[in-house]
Image (cartoon, rainbow, N blue to C red; front, top):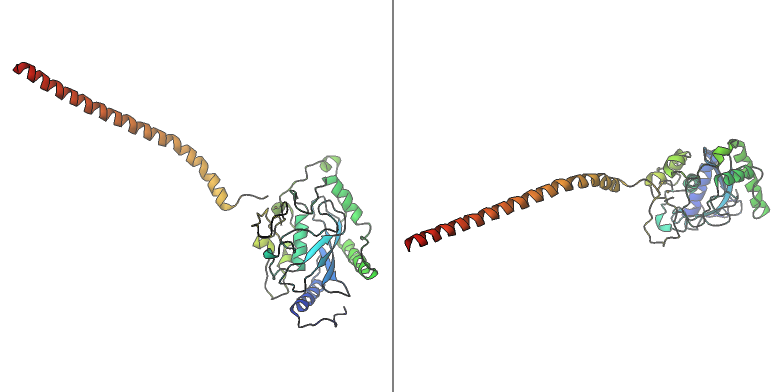
Length: 308
């Protein structure tokens, strides 16, 4: 890589070169990404579809643009291969992207962003910005087609890098599984936490400061719903990963509240009985006092009549 034109003391350049070195020394079968020869702030990548989903066997290409003050601000990335989940040549709107810089953490990297993207592919888009909701069988067709050739995009130098990445990914990708017609018609809905398991150990590898930080563990990566404002508090669907913001099981406090509600309903009859008994007791006491007063008044009347 002709990186002599970059200032190696620049924090962004230093970080990017570290990530390039780490990506090359620790390759993954799930993804591959490298910067352009003429611009290390722009990367090409390819991810493979997560296993046991309609994307299995597919190879999906895209591009990443890193800001000049990376890693303190997030990258933007888009898909170039038709996939039925994300629009092509449209910036993906997740909290790991530049759509929501307030959620980005400098400890995250290109690697963690790609892991997040893979994990989000089989989840329900729920109307998120830049998302598609193709049928499962249509996505399978696109997965098969994605293996045939890399997409055509950009300059000859960029295309050469895309083709090299495609050849590498094709050599590592499993064959597209054959499915029956009954399986093809199944509902395309799954939980992002349970079904989208994609080499989470890759997300823990960091090159910035030697530490490990998984955005999946941080539970802060979400996919935007209906283009929420930048200062909105994302509701995680949640990965969970770095999205989705996935609709997920209720949080612990909500679960506790739901578990307590039946108890509250069971206690109401007991409360009603206590209230009824108290009312009856009070009524008896009042009646007794009235009767006593009446008898006492009658006694005085009888004495008066006898005296006359």
